[in-house]
Image (tube, rainbow over all chains, first blue to last red; front, side):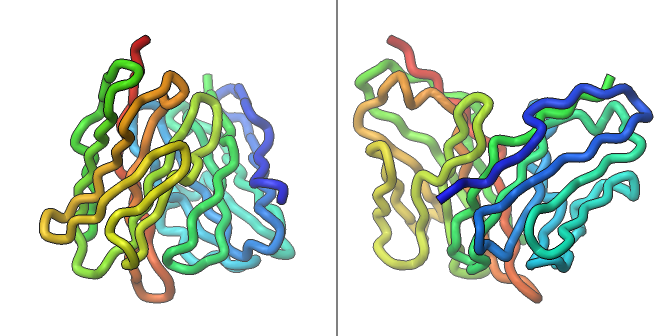
Length: 114
Length: 115
């Protein structure tokens, strides 16, 4: 089966610009998650979709971040306007949604805001 | 409160020697526990998981972990390190919560393997 794919793999933007990250989960996985890792820090949860609905968005840092999953397939995460502290690696993961279901991760998008 | 602690931020071993990566958790519930590995510029990959069956769990690439409830530990081991094992390892806990469950990541342990 195809794994979780994310693009772009890298993005370098200037402060104030907009960036949109995309994640394609494994086909059939209703559960989709976004995580972020700032350099040297822990992996932090951002939000969780079940199909097209936001199940939990408690980890979203602020209203500059907008995640969507129209149609319950791929998801986008938009940062507008980007700030320096948004730099980091953004991971997407999908799962079958049971408590003991493993997460399947994409390779991440490395975002650098200059 | 639920938490997971990886006791070492870095571990360095020589090729062919045993690997021990330590993880302790706190939980009011019977947790589901996982170990993931991340190689450079790659996503996290599942090594193994514990879900209240056998306490000794075998994973991929020769890794295994033992769930010890009395010690609230889930340490990851491998008898003989390979150069290809050099990566970052994450201990992960999931616990139920209203409406679903919550996943908590440890801070990660970076494993260095010397020739």
